[in-house]
Image (cartoon, rainbow, N blue to C red):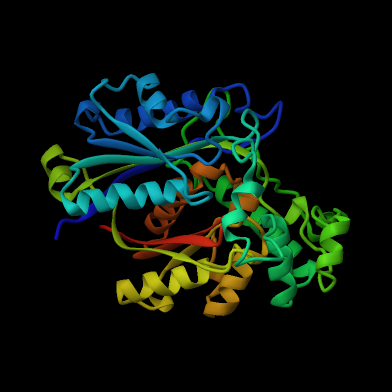
Length: 389
């Protein structure tokens, strides 16, 4: 069977996803074009050889509408002969793009593909593509007569059901900033970061973050209706223990092992196993647990075999419940911090995490890395990569 290998993976710095953020002045297609062009230049690759560009983007409206991946590759100067598509598996969109690209290589449909993603949360308002979503839930109302909820409230339900308290959430958030700041100071992100405009470093990392400072923030989702519906919740999810609104783009160069050898390129890792899973859409964020079990079973590996695992920090209880249910080693979990510190540019987060995980394995000598991402609607992707010497 053909192998799909990762030749390179890069990302922009994470910009604050609001007016005045370091990337807020850049059109999202230009943001994505920047990483596409840099990926080609870094590897001295003729872009005409790329069989497909598969990009992730969640809010596909306004400046992110009309297949932004195609717009981005044209803006990057790729030949018109190179096609592109944009996928939406919510927060896992670019992780799914990487799955599709790698699976296409394994199947023989592609020799070379680029997977990536973009999200400008400062310029394209989150949820602006979901007008009328409540009406769209009508066909499933018979299954969920009490109604579904937004992700922040799902995070609150998980916190209550698994018995986490506010302190545990804030401690995890402070850890994310501490680890990310240490990695940045040590140059750990240097090989994955490419400057975008004037922004050369992540501006979402706050090295001075403390549990005490986080403790004064007010819960973000405790409206009267939700408090009445869920009286058991103590309301602990705040802007401090959640991922911030973020601008960013990322991309990975994926090809067959034979094509890499033919081009004189050195693969850095290979895709080992893939999984995607669904779970309760009310809890929404817990599918990372069955997705992880599924990908480990496909791989024939145990969690003990994995040198580092990345569980997207959409909200602090997500990696915490994942680790509790799977008995994971906390020292291997998000060892360079996660989305609470590094940001969560929705459509770009999958390949952002892939780049960070790949560099961590290389810099520490690890062999296997696992990444998983919670997604709206109660879904999750999981991926295992194997570093190649």
